[in-house]
Image (cartoon, rainbow, N blue to C red; front, side, top):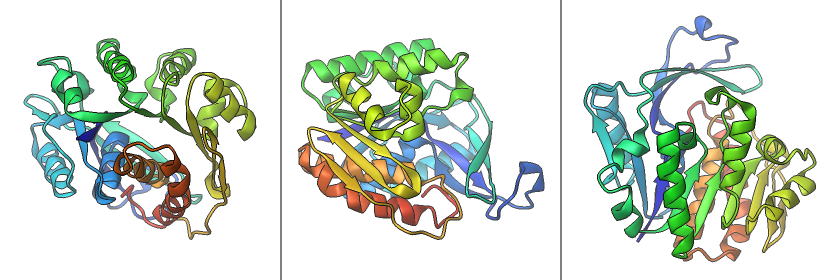
Length: 298
């Protein structure tokens, strides 16, 4: 069995020096990107079995991306290269504080919808023992219906759901709609992993304990809130506080995906035993700190 990850894959073109604007870049280095692809890759590196449902264009970048995901051990049965579609490419500028800024080019391909269109994802979910999703496939109405239906079926059949909001407000027409859709994925989730900023957006609570409590009240079994350099907290069925790890930060773009990928892997390898999250959190925080010392997400 495997964990089915729903969401995007794209190519990051990263300028590997601090710049304030893309116009200042003189060179870019390609790497695989997209939160679902990144999380799946990290989990596969940790020994978990993960499948990615999504896709890219049937072009040079799409083939490049698929080859690299395959080399990492990600199951690509439900990863589709579509003709007539351009693979999304994100040009990334990282400022002096290590914060990335993106300019995205390529087609909005509704990759999950197209990859699972043949049977609405039935076969993919049948082959999975867990489900990972973010809010990104919830922006488009048709794709949202498919993703939420798979989530409901997973919960009804006792398959654990892991949710990472990964809220990108620029993708949403209204802030309130992003909040609504993200909160719709909290109830029943085995684990919600969010930044404090995302949790504050979803709950209106800016203090970590209160934000975590609100997400638990919303129906999550466990919540991990990441607090940047201050580490992370786990609340819910288990409780843990993990301090931050010192790092020479050049870019924060891969930290969250690295942390989520490690937690997902440890959950899957343990048969989704909740205590594995508490056991894995120190390693995940340390790996996230190390991720900030490189330019690319992975």
